[in-house]
Image (cartoon, rainbow, N blue to C red; front, top):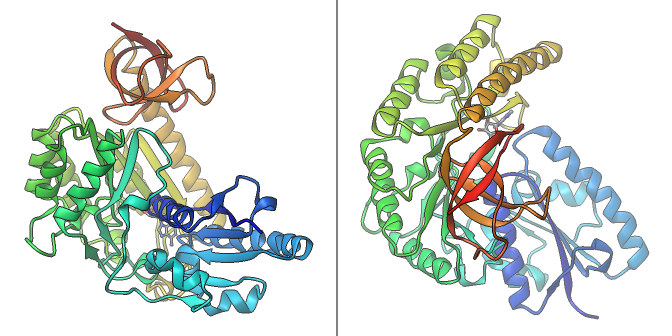
Length: 433
Ligand code: 5AD
């Protein structure tokens, strides 16, 4: 029987990249990727466990796959990613039709797993076997590059330190080699990844994130450099200077604040106060006035009062984030927040979430409208998904733009686009000569 695989991915970019690595690794081993799960001899679910909802989805998918396995017989099912790490053996107990469970530390250990040597692989081996030439990049213009894995922060709500392990930075030269290889294959946009990307420290030279940013930005052919996710307490002058001094580093910074109340931030163990966060924002704005911030916010953290929440609203108003991702607090197994107390009543949290989104809608609208009539550089990524007659790309500060232009334009070109319309989340315009 021919070896074919189907892979489904939930969660963050780190997981997306792990799926690209798994896919590349399987192709090297003679597997062919299929888009219809019924044609697969191997199905991988690459899972997320950051909130409970993500977890429930996986178990309902596993229920469906049980039926499929009954019908087709020869089918291997593997659960990968953060839920695999969190639940381990319990997944096999709850869903015994699963063949193996492997955590994020084992992406490089496919052979051992496919051989059936390990049905449960949850360790974080010292040698993470990162084969960057075998990544099945999802885009012709863009490459994700991991620079640091794991997280040493102990935010009380967060499961990530359990599921992704302690921080390990990759040697700087290794990162540069991967970026050069990606650029040589046409990926002119590089996005550096890490759970706390700006905590990076080269294990050999000790060079910090700012030094790495500069070194990557200076590689010939890197048209745009992005990174995700920064921790506010790890922002330093070297990082800000690197951003200021390299015009190919995106004018976009995702800086999760989680709450605008210092009282809540302390209970979350975020390692900064409201004032300190706003001071960091100010320093960055001073160096890079055109910066576009985005953020993550949790509403309904245990003990969050109406006053705390109003502080979150006022902070959002003050920073005027272009993008905002907000979630109701979701209790995660084994996290310290469980001992802090119960989540805020669901109806209250839902109502707060709505108010937050309403406020942000208005801010986002004003920001998007401010682009009307301007000509902005756009990195061309391919045909628009909504209207294949249009082209699509992103601005330097990370807004998606759909525009009229020459379809023969080579992918990865930087174009000037005149913006004539602001849509819900995106901009529309026309390429100019
Ligand atoms: N409940 C709700 N949201 C959470 N996040 C992380 N853990 C939880 C949780 N237990 C959110 C944070 C983080 C984003 C990726 O997910 O806002 O920045």
